[in-house]
Structures are given as C-alpha cells and as structure tokens.
Amino acid sequence: MVYLSTSEEWQHRSALLLQARPTTARITTKYKIPNLDAPKYQKPKKRKRDGEMDDKDAAAPKVPKAWLVLKTYDPESGVVLKFKTDRAADVGRLINGLGRLGRHMAALPVKDEAPLDTITHGDASNDHVTEAAVPVPKESAPAPTDAKPPQAAGGGGAGGKKKKKGKK
Amino acid sequence: MAAHLSSDDFFTRLGSLLEKTQQKGHGAVYLTQKRLTFDNDAASPEMVADDPLWDLHPPNPLPLIMRATDGKSQSRDRTKNTEKIKISTIVQPDDVETFYTRYADVCKAGMQSLKKRDRSKRKKDKKKKAPVAGSSGETKKA
Image (cartoon, rainbow over all chains, first blue to last red):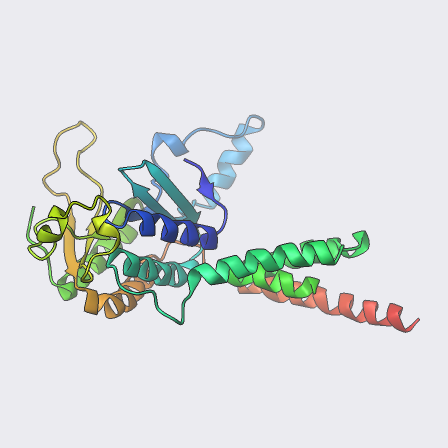
C-alpha cells in the first residue's frame, strides 16, 4: 500500500473514511525500531574496498532509527490509508489527530476549534488561487525550494502554510 | 484474552511496553483504536434497525476500544508465544479528551528512537537566509 505524503492528507482522508464507515474502520499506529542484527539489514551495500568500509562500520556502531506508521483500515471496503514518519516532533501532533478521529469513531460531534475538513479544503483552494492568479516568475522559483529544508526541520504541519505565505 | 484494563493501568503497561522495546533496541509496538461495538448492551438494539446505515447516526456516542500489543504472536520457529503482550482498555465518550492528552504524553515519552529535531541545522539555514534577504533589498534600491 502506498503511503500518503503528508499527515494532513492522511488525517483528512481518514476522517472521511471514518465518517463513511465509523463501525468497521480502525486505526493502527505502529512504532517500530528495526533490529539491525536481522538478516534484512545485513545485506552489504558496498561493493568496493570492503576492508575499509568494515573498519568504519566497527568504529561507528549503527543506532537503529525508529519510525511510526499510521494506518487506517476498513475491512469492509478494503480501504487502507497509511502515513509514515520518523520524526519525534510529529508524535504529539499525530496523536492529537488520532484524538480527533477518535471523536468520529465515538460519534461525538466534531470540535469547533478543530474544523479539520474546512482547514484542508481552504488550504487546497488557496493554493490553487495563488498559483493561478500569481504566476511565479522563474527567478524567484529557487527561493521557496531553498527555504524548504529549515521548514522541514522545524516540523511537518507548519511547513506547507509558511511556504504559501511566502508566495503571497 | 485478559479483561480490559482501566486507563491508568493501560498507560502504565503501555509505558513499560514502550520502554522495554526501547531498551531491547529493536521491536515494534502496535496501537489500535476503533469503535467498540462488541459486547455492548447499549449498541445492540440499535443494530436491529432495518436501516443498513444505522451506524452513521447512532443516537448516543459510543465508547472506543484501544489496544496495544508487541505483535509477537509467534516466535521464530512458529510456535505460539505465551509471553505476548496484549492489553486493551475502553474509553468512554466522555473521557476521550483526557485519554488522548495522556496518550500523547505516554507516546512522546516512550518513542525515543524517532529522529530528534535537529536544531544545529536550523541555525545554519537561518544564517544563510539573512544575507540573501539583505542582497535582495539592495537590488531593489538600485
């Protein structure tokens, strides 16, 4: 199954799925720390200068990097929505999102302060409007791409919004 | 399967499960949430209704069931693992808010192997940004 690229999209689609199938859909969060001793991770990637590389590996023991996969699955329709992250900064936000989806499951009214659907819709339409109305000159195009890395480091959700502000 | 735990017990056990995985250096923790429809006296009469979409508009909010497991049903030689950790708790609709607040805390504390925020990189980028902004201002003046 393909992973969705942003947590917002996962959140939005999961909300829609839960609205359609509140009884059968379930959300599984998998927190995985890989076992680097397992054969899967023992495949040698290097081809040349084996000896040298081995020395380096021994000098710096690998630290397993964990990841988190959120998966919404509805067995009745067979829909699977997945999102994967490896950033600790995402955890709080994602669990907050799980709480919001949990309200759908519990058939509780959606909280006013978190109108998820309108937010995602609004963002999407804004995006289109700005792109259509303001044809970005080619010279300025590299600027947003340069700005990407710090935003990514700063933590997922805010990244997209900041970028849009910059365009305006 | 053991009976459902109270949310306090659930969080304690979940915390120790995450910590155990962390100390072991590898492994997985599976957390599942879904609407509780089984073994629920309040929900059963609603299901009888002829409406096939009965579950879209239940008259009362339904509880959630939260499960956590280490996913180890079998050992490597395909025998049943009696040591499997599998816990669950029921969250009543009124408690959803408080439950998720604590849930987030436990997960944030337990999931320590995820990538930490890299602050050094961020500072570098800010430094890079500053001169760029200055130069663009100069060009405008010219």
